[in-house]
Length: 225
Ligand code: APR
Image (tube, rainbow, N blue to C red):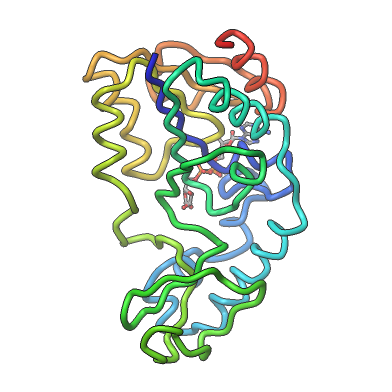
């Protein structure tokens, strides 16, 4: 069976990285216009780097939880063709052992030159004045897809959604497109759809497994291997 899995901030919540729209989420403490848009970066690049430097530090001191571990175990079992797409910019899936993780919103661990488009491994603390290793321009930004920008790997993702047997969304509110529309694309292509979340998000999934990801995801994976 070909399974496309989409994860959101909820899969890393129990690793201490928080979410965006829960009651103490990041967007309740920061204005996303200031730290997650190209315009915000143009206005105050230092503020944007401070925001992502703090999130990178949190990520480096966090550990994968049982949900990340279970998804890596599912991939390694080779019992199914598993495509793991994440909206998250942390590297907890990789640190749990997942491979070929498709980061549609970029990665905290990568840097991008706003001048020439070169990308490289991000240092723990980034500074916008740091020269690009390719063109030397002092236009360093996090390799994160901000609001108003085009998510990465969409051609691959849309192909996988159109050819999968099962689409599973884990720990995402289903409020940000294009990810929020993946369930419809999969259903239109004839796939079954499953949501794993503490409560239903209203996305019209065929089935729902409720609970925190660290419990609900391992329980679900056990039914597959
Ligand atoms: N286990 C599973 N799910 C959880 C847990 C948990 N322990 N705790 C919270 N959740 C769920 C919430 O119920 C919610 O449905 O995780 C979801 C988090 O939703 P958001 O905070 O909106 O995060 P996400 O859906 O990943 O946001 C999508 O929005 O701001 C942009 O680029 C950002 O990738 C992000 C995108």
